[in-house]
Each structure stands twice: as structure tokens, then as C-alpha cells.
Length: 270
Image (cartoon, rainbow, N blue to C red):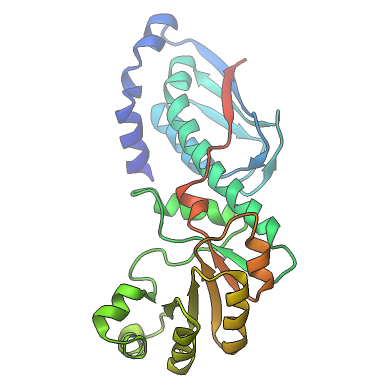
């Protein structure tokens, strides 16, 4: 995280903020407040803290909210004090991270609310911003969701291309079992016939890919309780509950990381 933030501050030329240098006397102290301009879930406090710290260790931040906590429009999220030049130079980098990660937490929480009471859980995917995966997946957790694979070494997910290259679904599951050790094995299925073949191959998870809720319900009838059933593809806030009620143990939603809008936050000098 430290290297990532250093890169972001350098990209913004924050260590040579010309406007702050021109308008603010050297050594001037000040206070600023970060407020929510929209309701949502908060994530990214440690990242924002680090951005201000790297700019100037004399900056003090007092957070009125915690990661994973809901904020309402107008809520004071943080009060800052310290060298005014440094506060303004770090502002955009800190807010960029905080708004982006809070947006992911907010989007995740909306899906969590949509399936509440069904027993189905919301999972992320590897559709993350390069270089930001750990932070974005942490934001998913802050929103009440769960992390799927962190990377290609965290589990074995057999997709259609693996099946085609290996020769068959069953053969692919068997091959993955040989090297999986304690890691889970999941296989993607696009048809009910593939679900039947997958059940016989006994993976840990069966991924029902791009099935509508009606087809998913049929798949659920084929999959024993010892194998988790995951649904992915075509799932939106409008239909997430239908997928959950059709019997999915988990819903994998790429949109919560790759398409989440930023939570509107602002910093103002007091």
C-alpha cells in the first residue's frame, strides 16, 4: 500500500503543488473536514491516512466513522489538522482512494441487502483494477460481501477454455484434484448436462454460468448439498434475489468491483 500511494502522490506532483505554494504561506497551519455528500458504506480509511502521512507526518486525522460503517449525507467522516499546504496537496489522492473504495463497499452492500434472508452470499471476482486488487477486495468485505479467489494460486477454477483444452469437464476436474492439495476446485457449467457431469466429478463448487433463475433452480435440484452452487453472469440488483431464491449458495458479482461508482465525498477547509 505504501508504494502504491507513493506512486499516486508522485503521479499527481503532490510533492510540488504549485498552487498551494503560491497561495498559502509556508508553515501555515489549518483544519479541514471530510464529509459525505451521499449515503453509502465507508472503506479505505487506512489508505487515506497513509496518503496524508506520506505528504507530511505532522498531519493529524481523527476519523468519526470506521471502515464498513454506513454514512449518511452530511456526515462528518474525518477532521484533519496540520500544515495547510500538505493538507491540500494530499487531498485529491486521499479522496480518490477513499471515494473509489467506498463506492465498492456501497455497491456490495446493496447486493447484500437485496438477498438478505435467503442464505445466499455475495462474492466478488478477479475483475479488479490492476494494482488495486487487495484494496478493492477489502472494500467488498467492508460492504458485507466475501472474497472469491485473490489470485490464480488461491484456488482452481475450471472454465470453458480449460475444459476445451483438457478434453472434457470430468478430465479437467480430475487433473485439478491431482495438484489441488488443500485448495478448493470449482468448475463452470453452462448447461444442465454439464451440471450432471460435474456432480459425478465431485468438485467443491459448481459455477452455474449465465443461467436464468428457472434454469438455476433445475441445477439446484441436481447438485447435492455437499457441493456449493454458485451463480454468475447476468445478475443485477433487480434480479439478484430471484437467483438467491432459486437456490444459489453464492452469487459472484463482477460489477461490484469493475463497475462501482465512487461515493461522493468532499474535503473543505474550516
